[in-house]
Length: 410
Image (cartoon, rainbow, N blue to C red; front, side, top):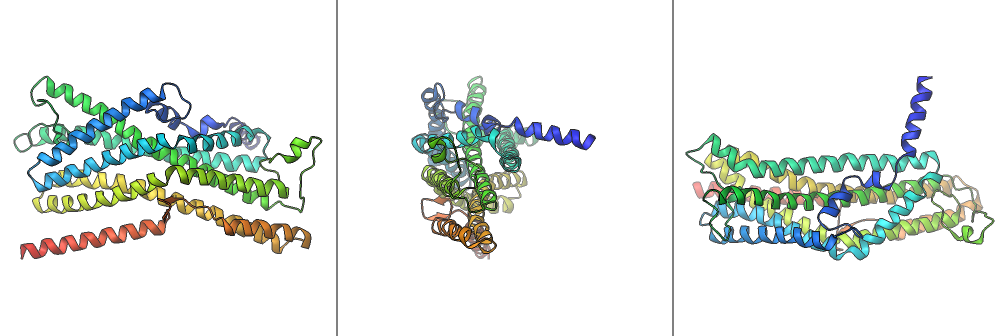
């Protein structure tokens, strides 16, 4: 009896899922930074957040130019590159609303059809939505921790070593006014914290939006594979209405719906790639620049015995590279689900009657001609293979750097 009750509770929980449940906290955060298509006051919020990032961009650039120490200069370049990435992502996301809006509308349409789907298809949508929600929560948590560490780092280090490290703003930013005296120092510190909050929200929410969109597409590809596995040779579903006959029904196993639903998923992934391929490329370039800067900084800090800054810099490097890894992992997952469409259709092809087999050949060919993947600048295919190459090249750079440092000492 308890098993039946828990089963009914799980079924009822599945029925309560909807679009806003899947997108979760990402939607209100995108609205807050002016990036949700169709939201209220989005232009005003976008301008406010953009002003904050342009200000940070300017003060850190001034710090780089005026900083005499090479090590400190490179440390500031690391932070400045992060601001550059955030400004680029913020503007590209806004400029790509014409691609993002129809993509979101496709997802909303899928959830509107949710109630009429079979239990196994509902389970697929809910499982991908649940996994996406767990990952996005982790991203927001890590971004929050990174923000706190970056903001409190000067205070904590000053309290631990007051004679060695004077109290300063995070990364010792150079403001266009005298911010070193009280109360201007405290006011500027709080304002800079608010600006960094905006940066963290832009960075994490765009990451979470990308994860949400790709996971939904992966779920749709798995649903399509499930539908193909139930194909029995029906060319067209029957209906009393001509309009219903022409309509593509999600979860319908007739050939008309399978082929057109496959094309609809292609359209979603194409819209995604058009919207975010520059974001992917910017992330790849900035992560490479980060690795170069942080590699030199970590090596120098280790030589100086400054292990507190060493731990902080390793943490920031891990945060940035984990974001790039997720992009590559998602690209691999999407490609895997796309390839699985062809495998599923082929399995049905060899185990079906001759008439059914002919129809499935068209599905197999469609899956082979148009494999689903996401790219960086329409050139690099995002995959774990790309991330492996990135890590190997970065480690090669570090090995050369270590060798040069050893030669300098000798």
